[in-house]
Image (tube, rainbow, N blue to C red; front, top):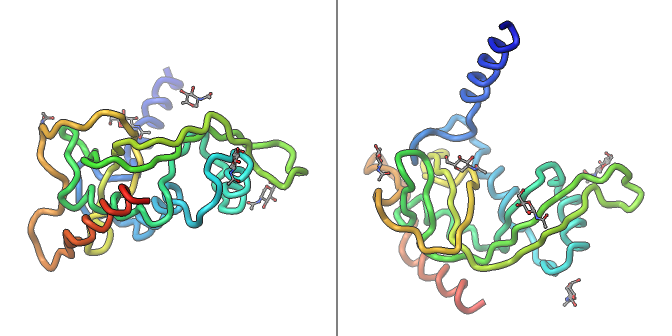
Length: 192
Ligand SMILES: *[C@@H]1O[C@H](CO)[C@@H](O)[C@H](O)[C@H]1NC(C)=O
Ligand SMILES: *[C@@H]1O[C@H](CO)[C@@H](O)[C@H](O)[C@H]1NC(C)=O
Ligand SMILES: *[C@@H]1O[C@H](CO)[C@@H](O)[C@H](O)[C@H]1NC(C)=O
Ligand SMILES: *[C@@H]1O[C@H](CO)[C@@H](O)[C@H](O)[C@H]1NC(C)=O
Ligand SMILES: *[C@@H]1O[C@H](CO)[C@@H](O)[C@H](O)[C@H]1NC(C)=O
């Protein structure tokens, strides 16, 4: 009885701790939300992304060994993520999930923390897969911009546009990312 009560309280507490808002482009108090997202999902430098060894070094160096399933895009490709939350992503259902309408080269990997650090690596990487996929994120307003703050999933199929786009609703001095950035991104995707 008490156990069930505790579980209910814990579940409630966990619910309140949701790392993002329940619909897109609502203000977040966490000013580091976007920086944290970039740290976890956008590579800071180029390396051999086919090599699990190089991945292990990168995750160790960036202190990113902690999560068992991870997804990254290449250096510079964060423009796509920003566009998803600024009119170029489609909303999935009634919650805060927005999917890109353009594919991005995504690296998915499984990570296990290593017990011994004698190898100089704090984790082991396996199940590495790199392919072009549509990505789904949650968008919050960080400062004056609507930006991705949580990575949800990725998919092979083009998303259907059933519930409109994700963007801040017209207001005071929104800094919308210009379409020129979008074309720059497309060029980057198709020519790199
Ligand atoms: C990258 O790593 C893969 C897997 O270890 C290896 O086969 C390939 O030769 C490496 N490429 C370069 C350019 O070092
Ligand atoms: C790797 O793990 C060891 C042992 O837990 C820790 O002392 C070290 O700071 C970690 N390295 C990095 C870069 O986080
Ligand atoms: C679209 O979003 C609204 C909330 O904004 C929600 O009530 C509705 O169920 C959503 N429609 C679909 C098809 O997901
Ligand atoms: C990596 O993790 C995912 C999700 O937990 C799982 O479905 C997949 O089978 C794992 N890959 C490998 C190679 O174990
Ligand atoms: C992705 O979103 C769905 C629907 O809200 C949720 O059930 C799932 O746990 C989310 N996955 C991640 C990794 O956030």
